[in-house]
Image (cartoon, rainbow, N blue to C red):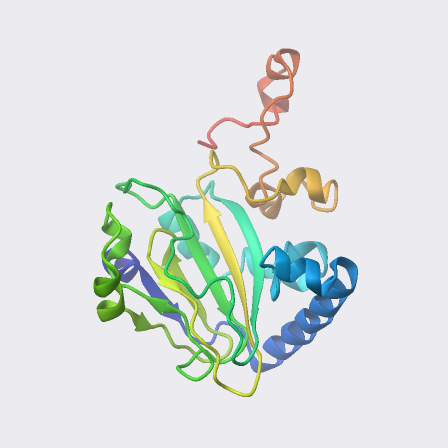
Length: 252
């Protein structure tokens, strides 16, 4: 936790086995082909969505298991809090020698202020090897504490690559300035990005509405998916018994 606080990131090695990574990478390749068929490659290129797969938990149970994984989720609770919710779950597939939408320096929680405590934390699952050749993510240590955007010269001089073996997880403060690396290898580099936020921050997609009754509202994953922080749709809905409110007490 101290490394995340001080430098803005840490790498947890070998969270997933080689077999689990193989199963996930195979599913990602299938889903990617399906989405290119559904939306069309030209359309995806136009909206800069080539290699981006969203809301994977709707596609396969294996992806929902990552959301509250026992080796990663406790870090989310210790940083963002026990009531943190999932902001997004996106796969990022980087093809050899292809430019992608995450290749510029950016913040995943792009705000013009710095909070005294983390409002958002990312967990980037390395489904393939992350190294200089495959294009490991570049991070600029300490920039999660900078209110003003530093110069390009500063970013280039201080950026380091967060390498990790297949199955590792890069956990970082979403205010940390970072960018995706260039894949100069002969293979595809796959990753799955989870972003968790304080529950009063809007999700990228309305998971409760999108997923419907697919998940148990009373379960832990139901809370993480945002089922406990749905704004009431009317005054009468707000004035129901407290235990029946869609935005439960104590969620922030």
